[in-house]
Image (tube, rainbow, N blue to C red):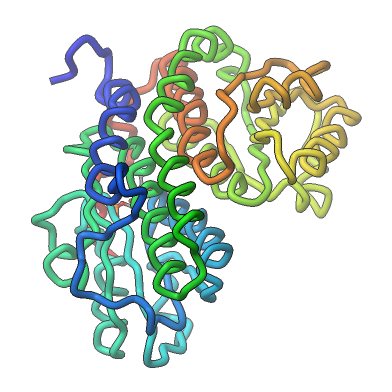
Length: 364
Ligand code: M6R
């Protein structure tokens, strides 16, 4: 049932404040200021290496998590798309934790990677949305997302719930490694607990994004740029736009643009720049100015301070609430989803059932 919504995708985008809160509730003890995983018997302190494997949007959630695991827990992280993982003879030493991330828990490549790593003696943690799925059953440790059924082929609420679980897992691993003081843990709990309200703040920009969709709908190509954890978001933005609006889009690490894709820039290629204010902001803005100097039309997604500092001369700006860097990827996912959604609606495509795609990809 779509309720008041025109599409399941729209409904699922708007459910995010609730389902992220629901997911966080089973990982955070807010009063105690503690992060607790639903796998109490498992001791994470022996984990020496993490391997993340997933496909599509779930893979981009994993890319964001790599930054967190390395930053908080100082544990090295390998990440691969599941369809490549088995074919590169990955080195899997004892003490390795493999994390598979999947909305459906049935994606064939991810499941094959899980089985391969299990046979190699890795401990398998599964971040999955369908609790009865094959991956949920075969994993050693189940870390559920509580997004509820996701019907739209484009993954939205599953992504933000995956990020919520992965942030909690990274913090927990840091704690097990003695790298997180009680005070730091309390602060992380506070920041994560702010995510649902911040998502609501992001959703308030829906109509403004709808109004700017026609600016993008006529484009043949669109570029997305981001740095740090906003780089995977750029990839996610491009994937979302491609799959439902059929516009060719690419996500790039902002600093990598001048190594090639900048040749594409002209006034017909909109460039979406994802840049919350913070330590990486200036660098990303200078990449954005390289685009503008070549006649490129920029849509800047930032917070009020960022828009104040760099919004002038942009084709359009999207203002997000000011949030802690930990939850920025969760919050900035929303405008990226809404933009793809409204562009697809403007183009009149079949948003929930895009051509050539299936919700769950059960062939390798
Ligand atoms: O069910 P999974 O999370 O394993 O699915 C992975 C991908 O097939 C999925 O994220 C796909 O890329 C989506 N259609 C993206 O919106």
